[in-house]
Image 1: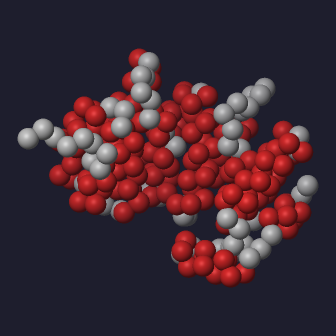
Image 2: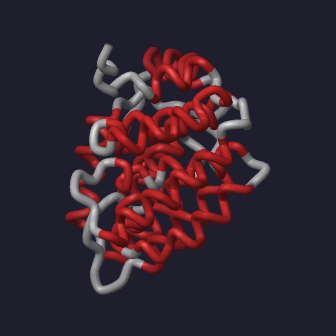
Image 3: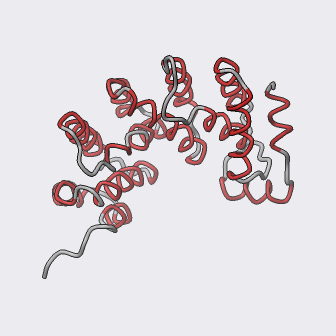
Length: 228
């Protein structure tokens, strides 16, 4: 299985491709293939390919700059357990971060990254450096890739510390009024609100007035109504 074979296997729907290009508004080729269809192919490739071949195919698919190819490449690396070691997978994912230029491909790569961060939380040190990047997609990735810490119901002390740390990153974002940065803060807080209402309210009480109104509203959208 080489990258040309993989792209050919994904197929093409010209009508849907036009619609996808209009929707994503990023100048790159689109095949018009929906995510469930990509999932079918990725599942088969995972079963057929050796670990090293999978890594190479993931790299090559991302390098095509074809939307569905990039998504498939990220999905190839999205699994919770990778043995014997996942250091090369993490290296590939982080090498993609500076190339992010659209939310959809970035989110699929960030899902793969989430699993590697959960497997080795010490990698948060590397992610923290992204929070001061001049590139909005790199800054955004720091929050999207750390969403698992917003979703824990009963965090252990080290997980609680990571949650507080990441909220500190979010606090540095509130004065950046780029839509995607504001959206990433809102997303993190909205997910957190389902599991840690007090900390979400505390963040909004302290920083909410500095957020864009849409982001503040979304961040609070899952909070129970305050008592009268």
